Length: 493
Image: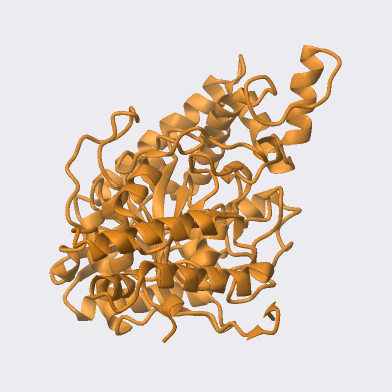
């Protein structure tokens, strides 16, 4: 087996035993990127020199007998809305096309401290606004299971990198499904932590009350290791939870016997592919056969989540993106006077989807409409959270589809924003409630594409989520599903 075909945990074991060096591991993934990225376009910026330098430092520490973190020397890819000191961070937008942050995000500082080589920054929907990575200002990333299809979004580049073996681990951000939806489309584990569990400091804001950084991985074991490395209280983030971080890896073997799992009754309407619903029910049956206590749970406000989200998130975006005016940093348009500079900078720097959401949000917050739209959406958000609180009185975990369908074709929904927004319908309510949820592979569709299911837990319930996902991994004998990619002369084909 080639090095890039291993999971992060296996690579960690090989490194600890000194069977391979961090430089060898890192170079293997860099070679894989060179072979596949010209086709799949997962990366906006590559950082091979930085990665190899970090790997060399880890190797020297290991030679010197220093005690290292299990992920030391295991490479990682990072979504391009997470700040990296001196390394270009664009949010896949023209307005930040040459922005080099003067500081690291807290999660990046954590990864540097344990010695994880950074392979590069991954493509995304501009400012994390999208569900397909087609809204990137630079290019569209392609699903490694079928390059004619989208990888999901907005963390599409991170999902592509892991699924195609170009990185063993990646970080994405999830505002309304941007880790879980691409994980489902690409056959991965994608975890959205409890709001505040992972620091947002250095994550370029889209919707501040919703944004969370989370891992994309091949297995629950890999995701547990990465979550443990980035979770924890951060005084630089006022929304950070002052809670101790459990050892997620040690809790993986807890099993699911006696765990109460509720299947969402609302995820069965006409927009759901019947094969997706059948796959989720098969997984529920499997869990029941191994000792879980199952039943159906109703979340009666499920249908209202999409409308509430697409008022709250754009409203926060319209406020957060006001800083991009051409004065302080970022792109600046040539103009004759100040007002024209503001207008031209934003007109030329922002893409169509970002402009659409800014306008929706500005309208929802405007005088005379605030109470009718934004305030009402916030009230619905509170009611959705209470729905979950009631459901968790009867169930430990809630299970449903991660996406209504497998990955759709590139361009299929580009001209219909509503249909694009509906692809996140399974993910939005968890984000509004601030609870943790995880996308887990649920098998392959008759089209050969991955399907995903989503498991949700009460706040700070990541241990239970990861244990359930790890159990399901075990039913596959720990072998992650992978796309078959042929590499010919001069790259992929």
